[in-house]
Length: 148
Image (cartoon, rainbow, N blue to C red; front, side, top):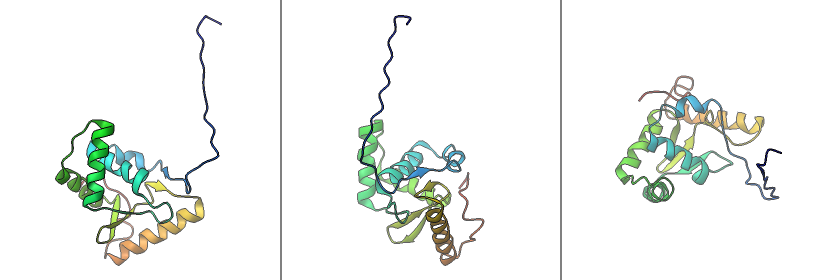
């Protein structure tokens, strides 16, 4: 009415990614303590690599190469492969992901939700069992840390 016209558009689609992957509120403080490459890598994992049923993903030379290309195309960042590998190690050291076996990792369910309450409880149990099998403390090592 003041001469300016505004238009909001909502795109509706019948197609949804299933299961839905959501960043948990608990993840935010830990994301603030990650450097840019590690943070970008974690989000890349969540969006492009994460198995929505198990919370698992593959991390190998091909994965790192894909991320390097993605980061350059999207952010204009030119990360070296060694830098990306170190950033992935940082995610492990900060309890944001845990190694299952060679090249297979599980994301901490405190960071990412993959479904409703029942699914979340199952992922918490799976992650706790993984920590115990690795000889880690299922309480202390469950929570991501702010420092290495």
